[in-house]
Image 1 (cartoon, rainbow, N blue to C red):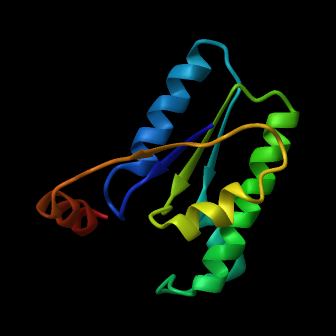
Image 2 (tube, one colour):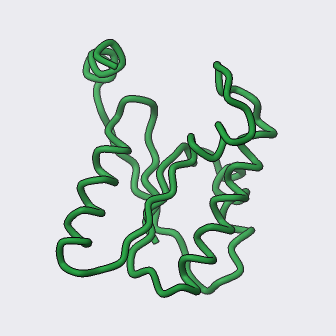
Length: 120
């Protein structure tokens, strides 16, 4: 399982979609879990700033990962913010299957992130 961690407009979704596409093209089953979408299931207003809802979203992501592991999904990509030890623990401590996350942090310049936000 791969966890893509980075700030808004840094390319999480693009990286996850491209990686998933490559694995699918090779005939593998892939799941992409978007933490933002899980948060929005709990509250669909901006800003998305409630720490308790982020905690619930991370726990829900862990449950989805566990089910995908049990269903033999070859690659599970979780995209979202997992900056702190406690944010990672909210996710990883809820995993019940033997899978362990590999955290990858993407970096982008402030200028590039601003350009991407403006184009959305």
